[in-house]
Length: 217
Ligand code: GTB
Image: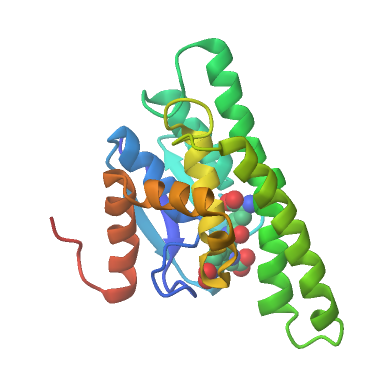
């Protein structure tokens, strides 16, 4: 059964692939699972029909037959469990890859989201100028630790996994800030993720929503 995901009808990032449908599209492309996309407006997201799928009125969601999921991490995990290619077969290696999925979302992405919130949702507040450097310090702490662990490896634990997919996508939001470039191995890690054919297909598909042009090739 072809799954259907939801994405922004009009993404505020104008097709930069930063919204969280991108990581779901990327996972589906990695495993070769075709999918359909239902685009939703900001107001439709808050309507009961969408809230029945997503209690918090957000994207992405994932529907496959009777199954409806929300939370990009849970959706990527579901895809990785049902298809080969995103989680290792070996039980211990699989557990470690899942650990990296949680680390990406809970430990690395969390302060990055805090920065976005402080800049874009609370940018006009009197405390923002004092708060931003504190948040940036917290992000740099995590980036330094992640950089130390990655070292000169290509991926976090052996072969590319769902842990790398979520980590790369979380880090991508830092690109405009220039902070990633302070950690050359992390910048190269993110570039390796972006160079994957599955990433490129997913990126082109979400960009096409913004440009109104179907992806080619
Ligand atoms: N924890 C949830 C998950 O991982 O799925 C978070 C889902 C979420 O934050 N969804 C956002 C949303 O629906 C879109 S991705 N927002 C609408 C709302 O809450 O009303 C977050 C996002 C939005 C915009 C950009 N951007 O413009 O760069 C990047 C990421």
